[in-house]
Length: 140
Image (tube, rainbow, N blue to C red; front, side, top):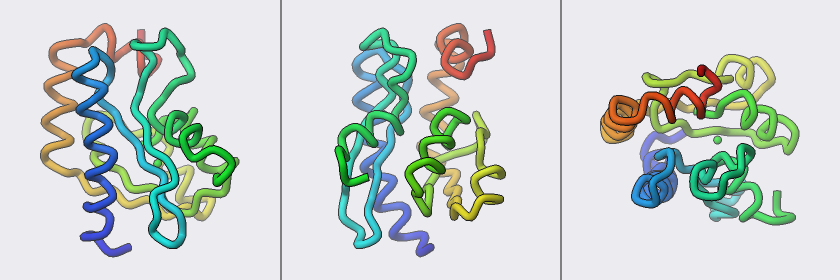
């Protein structure tokens, strides 16, 4: 995948992550783009804001896409596989590495950008909110 296009798509997910952080939530965003490059859905982790353990960023993006239907955790990796998503662009995988290998083994193109801004935002969040982060990734 063209890295410049991946970075442009990442901007949408980053906007969602920043909005989630400003709302007091986990700063993870997602954007779902179609094969033609059009935005199908976008969302952010809303577990804290909604009190809903299933409202991961990827889930919110899938829901926003409606019937048109990326570092995904195992829960979100399953959604990617179930709905036949062919490519996932990950902003950073230094703070958390979920199902990348498993997705790649099943034919999903995984593009890890390790964007410095994403890494910094996540490190700052994790340092300031270790209990909430551990709850989010299931490491209590």
